[in-house]
Image (cartoon, rainbow, N blue to C red; front, side, top):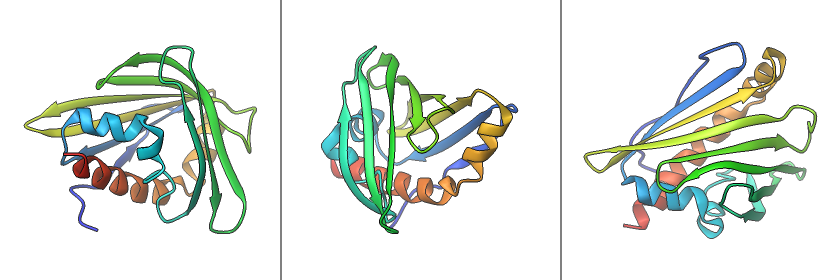
Length: 159
């Protein structure tokens, strides 16, 4: 699969993870691929499993939930609530991995466009360094890189 870029993961603070990725697609299409359940189903699990369900009520106070069966046969699920929604620009939401419900985070996705390309920045704020490090060392980066490659392909395909 041809992709335009890999995501860069940095640690702005002891409690934060920043993911930055450029896409060869306009931001309104990246936003659609990121927020429409039928499009999310095409990229979120990448090659790591099968998406079982995606529910999203993209509005402030709206709930969301993603569930997949990983290739190893176990369920992986996340849920939360949207706290900020600026279409095509910014989404903030609480994020709870259902395998560790006592470690909620806040994830903010910001999209900026220049010359038909989109930069996505996802800032994940954890309650403490321990939770951040567990997230960081969970193996999430490999799956995330694959998923964002697929997200790019979905967004390009919408053009």
